[in-house]
Length: 322
Ligand code: SAM
Image (cartoon, rainbow, N blue to C red; front, side):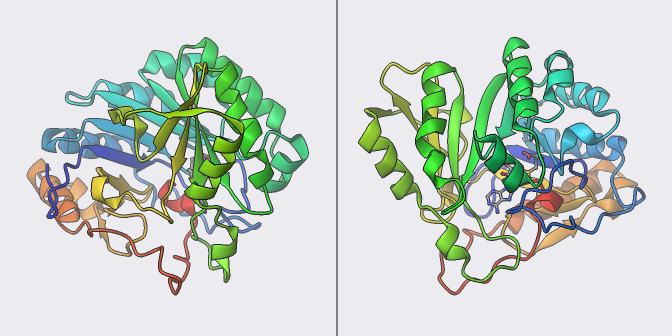
């Protein structure tokens, strides 16, 4: 399936809940986000219908996200069904890791191949402060369990100036110990916040820090790199990656569409245009296919977030899925 700029769209991200068991300060306000009612949230069977039709249109990879996807009841059975959908070759999940210790093995058995675990600090106090109360020890136990279960692990660290930018090197050092892909993500303005540009540590700065300490070799882009530029520290089993959504956007190779927990399809994280898929879910599958094709047809060439004048988007990543 190609969009109007010739990009192949083969990746679908589904946010299955707007609930989260953390309150990360860069993702949502302290009081959380106004939650949708259960009636607004799509049922698993609705998501499965979307996955089936999307797979017929050429989607090959599905990522389940949230909110925190592991807090939704019945998620394991749902994942099993997504993995079993004809045409779906890859199933990945994005999680904060709090519930991983008890679910990692079942996730693997359900057919999840990869996990992206969001982790923004390796210091217990700083982790608790960024997440407004989260326990680092619990996430680290979850990572151990995920490793033991044989899941491929990517760690996502959102780098924020004055918050955790002094931890870039300790995070990179994890790739020397573990076969993980440690990815540094430029902070993106989502909440209404003036002066957000000050918080962004650019990919170039991150790379300069890494280069000062380590000898890095760039890894040719494979299909599992996603938008990250990937490097390996000499002798490391893992890799480090940099995701420069702001300073050097990668829209030209964007291959994804998103569906929120309430069924809004979005072709770009930073574009307000959405299509409500709910009315398409009752009818014929061909109607839903047309809806998804319409969304793909509207995918813009690129986002405009690197503009100095750009206002923050004014949404919580938790309501869209990051
Ligand atoms: N609860 C899951 C988790 O923590 O990974 C999935 C949802 S979370 C919204 C998905 C991703 O969005 C996380 O990796 C998080 O770090 C990222 N994210 C949220 N707000 C962000 C921001 N302002 N800039 C960059 N990434 C952000």
